[in-house]
Amino acid sequence: MSKTRLTAGEWEIYECLWEEAPLTLAQLRKRCTQRTGQAVSTAETTVARMEKKGLFRVERGERAKLFYPLFPREEAVLEETRSFLDLSLIHI
Image 1 (tube, helix red, strand yellow):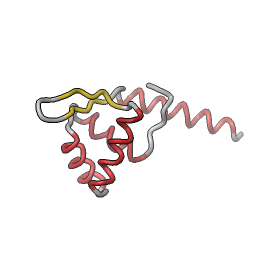
Image 2 (cartoon, one colour):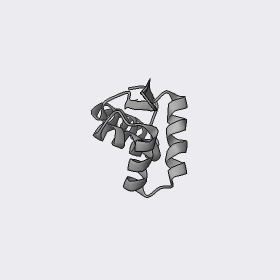
Image 3 (cartoon, one colour):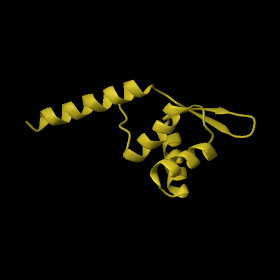
């Protein structure tokens, strides 16, 4: 995984993709709004920002883009844990 740390909103998008990938933007919007109660526009903005950051593998589907996670959940959790521990050691 890259050294990019995911925000809380990005984690929610990734949770949806880890459950079932690939997903279209419409599917991601629907799942995230159901899961978090956030506005549709918030989910769209988060996905667009993540796409610009290069946090997805994107393929052209027949009718829409298909979004895939770039890394497995276990790798992301491990990276977050390492980052947290590194920050914790700085403050000791």
